[in-house]
Length: 517
Image (cartoon, rainbow, N blue to C red; front, top):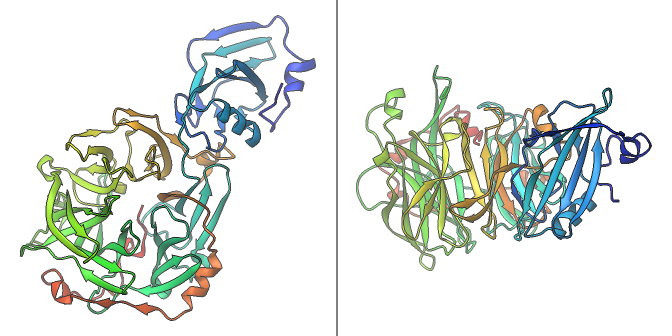
């Protein structure tokens, strides 16, 4: 018999010489409470061990894992309810049941009265399709001012290995943010560093280039990036963002655009362009995202209000989902067309992300404004780009769902959710079989399954990547001491009305320092 659980007490001690005899077995007609709740989920065949804690009364616990593929069973035990699977046995278990399921039954043991409670088994489905091997995210304290200690890390989804590739402690404690990868490539990406080391740092096959995107002709710099699939172009939002505070416990922090437009950066020519609208109206434009074929740029847009922004006027700003056609040969855009009229529902759209096959788009829908990470009502919606039908996804909770992304094969979603404590965002995953068949979400597995109860950090901007990043934190430190390359603004005359009269803030808002989730 193989032993999967190796941490607290051995199978031999509990169920060998001292095994219960003639014990009273009570069958409990429900599945046991476990944390994280992995019951009924669909998982990738290459995911790290799904360790969990049994949250039931008992002096010890017995766990029986059944493989329907060959009708085999493995039993192991826990003295304290913490269940850890060995990596090797877990991998064999998933490979054997790929495309099927495994069944787990838990029994609690009370040795004082020789009794046993046997709970109803629960199943875990194992998909055929793998998940990308790595996930990148920023780790930081939740809130709006805590950027002094942060790092951007890569985590192996096949193991528990986590390592930082950017750390702000060696970059004068400046904010680091907006990591963005071209086509899930760990060797082609960039990050933003703000403050004294402030610039955009592009990585290409081990080489780092420090690029200054903020110029006199483009005074507000760049954020919220999206790579064109071809790798030559990047679209950013250039914006001035403000915060307001409210006594409403569900919206005590509001983030909104005072100004926001889109810009296109040509990495080949080191040139940046304002993306111009054909009419004379003023808009807020943000959260760009390319279609997989690179022919369309999707983004969020709202009509700019003329009066001074206050709490009441913020609630009248609603962002629609729109798109423009794009010619990659000339670098030119077509007219803006509405894809999803959120304003007609008195709602607002953020974070449009398109599936790799180009058929579906997931976005966050919330009451008003932009940047919904502090909005409890924010939920994920799925839009079918082929027929325009949309639906609220079944992976939502009663708390905030915000940033999200697709795996490279389009079968897995990752999204940030505050469902656990309402404060910190953790990465959750869901299997995407079809719009009406989306798996129950599960949180990122950890070696120590109790860590989420003790972790004060939030996971920011989870992004799938196809491999391990080779760049190290000291590489960015070295690059930060190099002379930056300054871009050329090609069409300053196409800046939005009144844009060039903006003066730089002496004290940028905390959100502009990069505390964006």
